[in-house]
Length: 418
Image 1 (cartoon, rainbow, N blue to C red):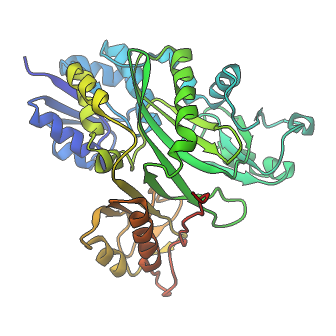
Image 2: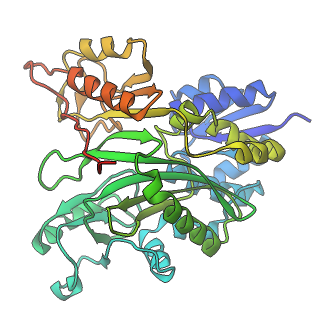
Image 3: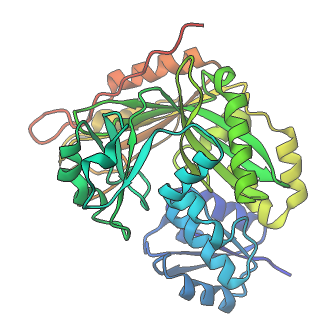
């Protein structure tokens, strides 16, 4: 019998998984509200519907005789997949009653505290909070909504008065009118991805998540993620133990489990957030550096567990090659000249690239796209990737109608000497 797979999400990162599913002979149904989602062009059938309409999508699953569901790369998609799978009685590695551990920042923080896992000191604040609620909190703090992800509504604030000033801006798109503040950690930051099998965490990767400060009050922008981390030896054992504690606590027996964390020499790993999915816009780097395909892993979880077990058994997060994704952010302005960015994307050693705006379009909060541009590079060594990164950061330019630079200038951080 031919398998029938629902793929939740249709943006670029779902194109490959849709094509791979079709190559295996599966009937593919791609579903989200994006009528022009590129993955829909490759699917056998497409539905244009808001992914949060989980009851309606569960009905579609029954109608289409769906026997498997897949998504990743987004917390919103992950949450909706879990709910749809429960309603449509489809295989899924998490159940709705466990979602709050990964989707509600306050519950997540409480879990970390119970497990005695280091996390930045925090407070949950309501609009009528008092100054004594901030006792023992050291400024600056990061302020964020409790139920939103993707770096939306996040501020770095230096005093209590600023919390009041920005409170409603932080949670204006939230269903929960509360915010989370936590002490700002200036240490090195990491992205870690794993797969849980039989309750055991298998580390897939640990990456350096590099940032650049752009202006006071703004959260530093993400400018480069590098695989594998330069500091693997310093963080691997402790970070792995932490993720295993989390999986055991939530009783997650299988599936994706990721973590963002901080570390500074002489201090313990400090957890920022836990997620039940893979990181978007960078999961490709795992395959560039190690050969392990995240898309294949997701498909095998649904339909070929023996293959998944073989791949996990053979995989090591200590990659022999290095790869990086370079992110470029821009100021609110009109784009006039992208010629240098286009030329750069055609250079032979660029593995993949995308320009998110066309000439004549305006970068603005009303036209939200994750970045202005993104480039993927690989190399035999970290030194080679660092050298190429600096060349690209120096050459990359996009101009506005006044001939001014659109992009913030990315910087590569300094690492401890080895």
